[in-house]
Image 1 (cartoon, rainbow, N blue to C red):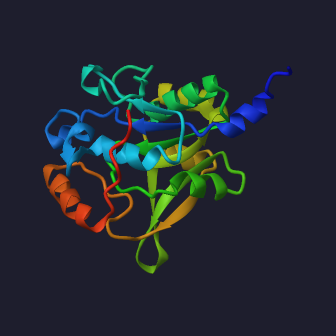
Image 2: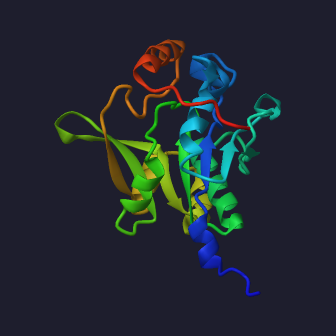
Length: 221
């Protein structure tokens, strides 16, 4: 029996990495993605939206891995020191996806529980061949607000990204646009599709939004 063509394998993969590598300082420390939201944790809401879209899924997280036990994801700490930020998590996602034989990886933020359920399909189909495709929230008068932690990234760029990080680059959006990123717009809604939980008051607002957003079933771990 002939083996599978590597290009066929790549077509079957929809890898995604959840970016949770920060220190949650604005939330007072701890892992904000593990905080309760309704009957689930924030990360459970993220997974309930992401799992129907992508597989496999990894988690970019640093520090003590114990809090993440039971989440059921491949843990990918930064390979660079001193918490370089989400760009380092995207790099780890690229490296992980490339090792799987995938051509690209999707990134999502761990603290954004209402992101679109068609994120992958929209990003994958909306970039005119570009190697980076970033989500953008469509606001008043058609203005876009780029959401740089939500994107589709070609693994071919991982060497360039590593070099940029070593030179001190930390801004996801800036590096992406310098490397030819295009944007895919998502319409405004209630709750806002890219609403993120940074502060305690944001968590309270997310609780209020649950009444206006269908609550997904808890993920099967």
